[in-house]
Image (tube, rainbow, N blue to C red; front, top):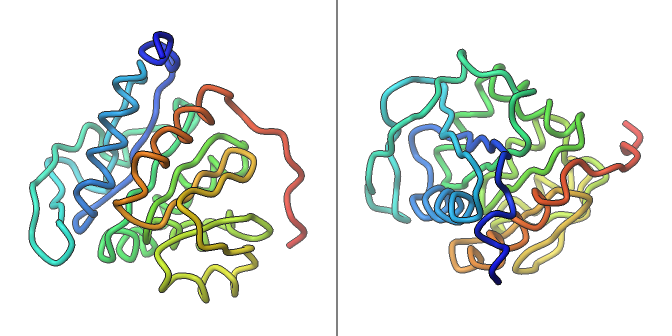
Length: 192
């Protein structure tokens, strides 16, 4: 697809993560988005580096492009939330991270969340009324938060792209690029 190299030219995407992210769930979307022409920033609650994991083993550290305190959500066209158990669990305790995520849900901007990443969508109020998937252990949490959970490689609901695990990354990245290229999604918010 010749146009894929520039599909996202001029679009800025935030990848919000902290220590404990699943390595491939951060690095593969970043590579795919950059290859599609997006400007991608790894955003974290702290400057410097964040520590990745490869399943149960320590992975590589990744450079943080922007500390959360220095970014403005309005400057980004889309958001990516990698999984890993530690990463989203820690982000759920960061009010600035939850407010940052909430902006994308409220503004109807594309959001991609994979594996355990959807946990943060619960706290940001984005899960209610949305069709989603995740790592299977999050099913009850998402259903209890009002999501319609399904076990599928990739699920898209008006700009919200979710997947289950690293093996789903090719489908996740392709659908994420498609949704970001489409831009904001007009949808009615679910009743609270």
